[in-house]
Amino acid sequence: GNSVTQMEGPVTLSEEAFLTINCTYTATGYPSLFWYVQYPGEGLQLLLKATKADDKGSNKGFEATYRKETTSFHLEKGSVQVSDSAVYFCALTPRVGGATNKLIFGTGTLLAVQP
Amino acid sequence: KAGVTQTPRYLIKTRGQQVTLSCSPISGHRSVSWYQQTPGQGLQFLFEYFSETQRNKGNFPGRFSGRQFSNSRSEMNVSTLELGDSALYLCASSPPGANVLTFGAGSRLTVL
Image (tube, rainbow over all chains, first blue to last red; front, side, top):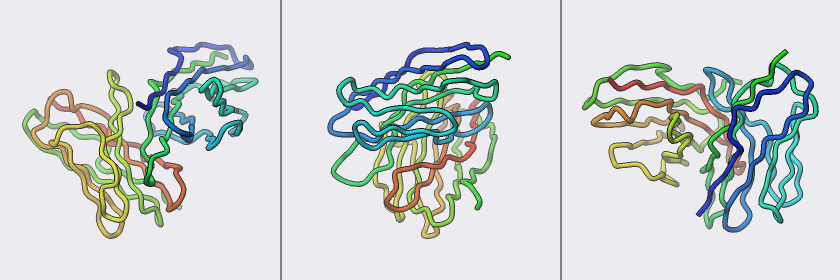
């Protein structure tokens, strides 16, 4: 079946540190991959996405590359800020016969950035 | 441009009652999906509607149902509430031809 595995948190970093949150997936075919972010008391916001192998999604300094050979989509940022503190979710949409917007999420990784 | 609007934002029910949650998608979006978020199970897909038709359904009991109206607004209903139904229920909409979801702020349901 389809599934997403994320590194467990919390991840605690100092401001300006380098961030990596690991994400691997299991899926049939070629899924689309996403990172969503959830700030306290809010819904989810799309951070970035990639729809095919070797695509790099990027937004607000965050990047992730769709690696088919390792079935991974790790999230990185070169210099985190306190305002990046949130829960980050890796997700996929499976490629099925018909159209779908069904998302399969990982468990989420809490990031806490200290000043 | 207005975002996805969910009502009510917070509600408290008792076991055995039923609840209806509402979602107004972004104008022009015809696909609406619902997700349940709990600390134990994380984010789980409930169902997806497109042009008033259920396109996909997650692995939830029949107590969970939904529908979509001709203006793309959607409702979900949970009958015979159980304590385990306490969760944040998130609605998301997507424009035609693009599998990019915009989420609402959610409806937080507490079952006592």
